[in-house]
Length: 385
Image (cartoon, rainbow, N blue to C red):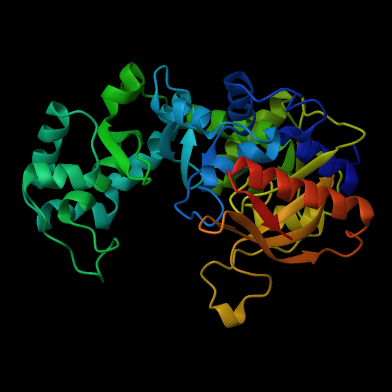
């Protein structure tokens, strides 16, 4: 089967929830948020808040102006629809995905930076375990106050001037003994024993080969089309972990090898991926959106070379500090350097860089509509474009 680049773009966008009718026409409800969670399989977390916390942006891109409290409720309230875990990076995943990621937690236990913690802070992990077992979910700061312990580690040590309490909590988080029961309005994690948050799921053990198979299956469903590197990158699997799973899915017919000579490498199509004739997307994408987070895939599908410049010195930035790709139709037609100026109550688009052939009256109008919609969704009174 031969797949053209435009066909592959439409397949990829449809798999990610940009096909016609996905968002619906009414005010988005929890049902639509859940539908988005089911489609994406994970939502990456990042503390950057230039426009909004990054976890809110992929849902906005697909549903429009939704109540972010719905996503908070999905994460924080029973029955939990999302839980934090290391997946792609720090992510929100459905609780049923948590046992599939046991290999990440097993690897963390063997990591030197975690293994050395007990040597540097004898008895501290047991104190943390005991306190968390007795107390309701709480932040690292609150637990420090409870333990009356405020020792700060050196800046050059792993972490960011973390206290030994915060570092210990992160050890327990990465190794799976504790997880997040939610976040505060300041984005501080509320720590709790994993069993208290996940119940029986915290004790479920899935053999690694079965877990890798399911993770690759979910990646293929979420991506629609991609190379082996794309399929393993979604949940950050190694080649050794992912390739046997890819071969099994090829054998069962769930994956199909397709002819896409314009895309370097072997390309796989999920057998049930939708193949729409048209996509009518209109969305600003987070830098951490699955459509663009695998940079080689974005370049192959959209001829879009994209790099995050947040950590690039100002004088070396090409497009700006917090740059959001703009999807219109089935193409990425522009990128915008955006900031929410909450003091002035304006959404500022510092600059817009149009892709070759991307700028016309329709795309300009669509971009302004999207910026205006985003400003309203953020509760800002106006915008500058």
